[in-house]
Length: 448
Image (cartoon, rainbow, N blue to C red; front, side, top):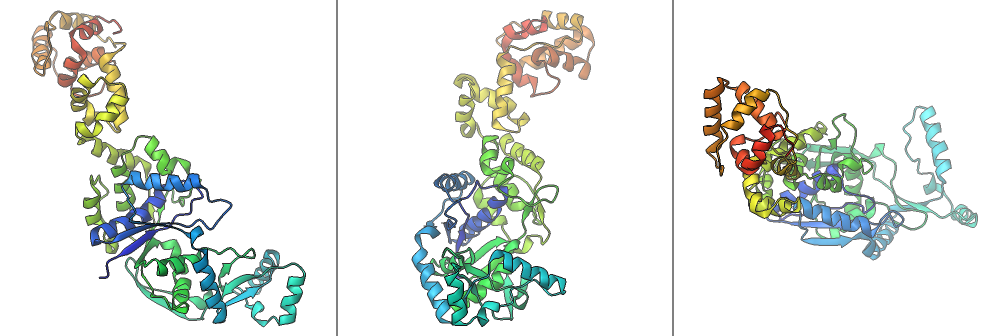
């Protein structure tokens, strides 16, 4: 196989969301596995909506996911190439000027629908005389330019969908150039893929119809046609398509909410495949799981609750060194941070959740008192200290002998008094961090 060059081509008109992460990662991981290269191309031909803020945010979000582009390009810097392609297609008679207004086109579509015909463009502009074109321009109309499709079936072997085809006779000739001379997505995408050497176009299945059109443009311009792979799209749990307006699913929001990039990577890639959705700790491991033949044809439903589960799996095995700086930023003292992390990480969903357990350790905690007499006995038997990993077992054995309590009746009153909670990490590890003084105060019913 030719050494792959793949591309991810977002428009800098908003923040990336989890649905964008899927094609970005599939492209990057495919290139990583095959020893290829990854191109980040900003499709920034929409001058009004494209901003440098969003362009910077895209690069920041990709970096957070672990994606490091080998190449970078902007469509706004490649207009000369698009102009040259335009002139080539005009010279071939494949690109022709049209003067209909949006309102006129809408009325024409409605008439066709009313007659039971498909609402595709009827190529009326091809029959205009030179005089009619001059007259339109005299009225102040500027032409938009359509690509004249060959009415034939375009077929290709899709890496995801296998043998695929589009009947271009069922499509309108696509507009490639707007009235103001700016290019629409289809033309610059083809020109960039060809001139920048893209070998594999890996994108969502919503682009299947575009592929039929783009293959004809590749061929008209004498360009080699890349290999295509159209994967299923991520949707919300309710089946709704993802979009930039769903801010809570933006990569920026997920990062700010404390999710690990490996959790987002794992869920974005494995959802909608025959692989079990689980935490995959490294990109190299995840790249080994990318198999286009195992991607489902059905939409891939993204359930945010699964992100919590996967994130917890990652946190539960995270070494202290990886969490250290974030723990210190939460205000956890350095001399305590590693011990606390070892004790509490199995109870966390996010690293930031450790702050709650530091509060339980350092206080103040309002103890929950279920049986004052029982706790009075427990307090009388509390060892002098200092506490270590054996203290909890020896102490609770003594309390058990003195009170006859065992199981939940023994442990729950102690947990409620010491932490104010009915759940949490193993108290054998937590008690030494709480220390004797605070433990004694809480057993006595004092907030400490």
